[in-house]
Every structure is written in C-alpha cells, then in structure tokens.
Image 1 (cartoon, helix red, strand yellow):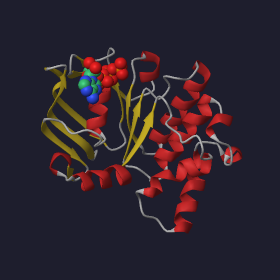
Image 2 (tube, helix red, strand yellow):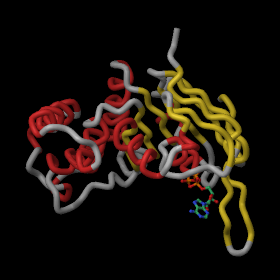
Image 3 (cartoon, helix red, strand yellow):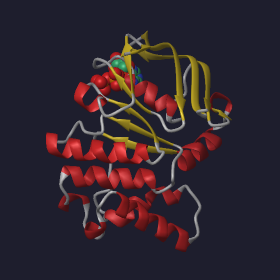
Image 4 (tube, protein in one colour):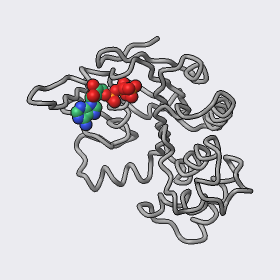
Length: 225
Ligand SMILES: Nc1ncnc2c1ncn2[C@@H]1O[C@H](COP(=O)(O)OP(=O)(O)OP(=O)(O)O)[C@@H](O)[C@H]1O
C-alpha cells in the first residue's frame, strides 16, 4: 500500500491587487503518495506557481487544510514552517537561483545554513549529491563557468543534499535547450525511480510526459488530465 505524503484539501488563495482581489487558487484538492512523480500543467497565470509555493511552505493559503507527512502545515508557526522547508523540501526553479560568487560545492552546501549536520556528515552528503548529478569534475567552478544544464544540475544537487521527502520543481527546464532539458528530465526520472517524490510545474506536454501523473490547473482549479 502506498504511503500518502501530501494531502491538500479545499486550498484557496487570493491576492490583493490594485484595490481589488483576485482568486488565484479556488479550492484545490491534491493527494501525492510517497514515490509519485506528478506534473501540474496549465496556462500562464492559472496559479501553478502559487500552488507550488503553498505546497512547499513558501506561502500560506487563506483557507483549506494541508498535511505534509505528519505535519499540519497550516497550523505551524513561521519557525516550524522554516524547519519543514529546510529538512523535508528541495526546491528547483527555472532560473536555477545559484549564488554567483560561490563555487559548485559551496552552492550545494547552502541548505546546511538552516539544517544542522556535523561537518563530516555534511561533506559526505555534498559529495554524494554532486556525484549523483554527475558534476564531480566541476566542484570548484562558479555558476558563470557552467552551462545552463550544469547549473540546473547544481540546483538539483542542492535540493538533494538534505535528502528531502519531496522535490518541488517550477518549470525546471524552462531556460534549457532540448538536449539539456532531456538530460535534466532523465535525472528527475532516475531520482523518482529510486524513491524521490517529485511535483513539477510545467506548461510543456513533452516535459510532463516524464512524470507518472499529470494534473491540469485551470482558473485556479485542479483536475486530473
Ligand atoms: N505576490 C503576488 N501578488 C499579487 N498577485 C500575484 C502574486 N503572485 C502571483 N500573482 C498573480 O496570481 C496569478 C497566478 O500566478 P502564478 O504565478 O501562480 O501563475 P502560473 O500558472 O504559475 O503562471 P506562469 O506559468 O506564467 O508562471 C497571476 O495572475 C499573478 O499575476
């Protein structure tokens, strides 16, 4: 039997914009089991990133309920939410979001600013994450000296270094050419095959075809493809 990792019910989120209010997420239910690989597709502005931010504890919904593991996310304090992000969730974004002045190794080690680990354990985990994404030969390079595909590999290693329960990826191949996109998607698929749970936002059918399940977001509502 599959273990449920994430269970969201009746999630709603409005933004106040220029004196008015827009309903961005309008009552979403979503179940994700441990080991799932789910794509969320939909047109620009349909609320995909907003939902992903809520799932990762980067934003709070206005109402609904959301369990991640055993944590009732909507009742957590800001500090508790930070703990969940630092220990359970790995984020991968379209723009890679690496620190330009740090080399690959130091970028991958960044999550340990918020996640306690003994120095030996930290180094071992950084080594393993860099090896996992095939960048052992680029450890002392800075982001500027890497290709887009390599930069995204660094971002994935940074997400993996905490051994997250969940990887959330927002258009992870949006800035990559086809060859690099396919390499990154193969890597996601391999990670999923070895047990990593992934929720990925994309507007691209070919990208979504790597996942096990596709959901469609339309006007703030989510349905199965
Ligand atoms: N912080 C914010 N304040 C006000 N409005 C916001 C904010 N963030 C997002 N929005 C609005 O919410 C709507 C949904 O945005 P969101 O980024 O979630 O959509 P999306 O489906 O991810 O779009 P895209 O595919 O273009 O990234 C948009 O109309 C956007 O302008």
